[in-house]
Length: 90
Image (tube, rainbow, N blue to C red):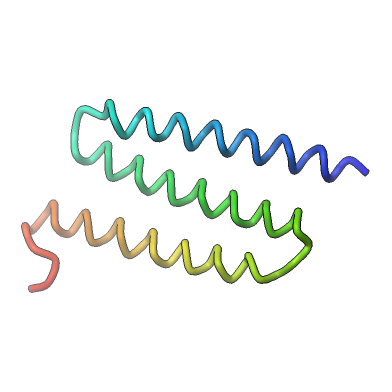
């Protein structure tokens, strides 16, 4: 009974946090702050997909969330490695 209302509130809160992350991405003073912001946006996107999967009542979206998590992790590691060494592949 309360689950649809809680999920609606949660989806709205995640959407607001994504907008705030976009603002932080545009105004971040250093490149490392932008990388952390992109990683936070990936985590928020994962939470958004999982919440929508719960709302839709299907487990398919959990697999999509795992793929987002893997892609976000690899992207963050690649950005950091590029920042430290100047190239990704040695």
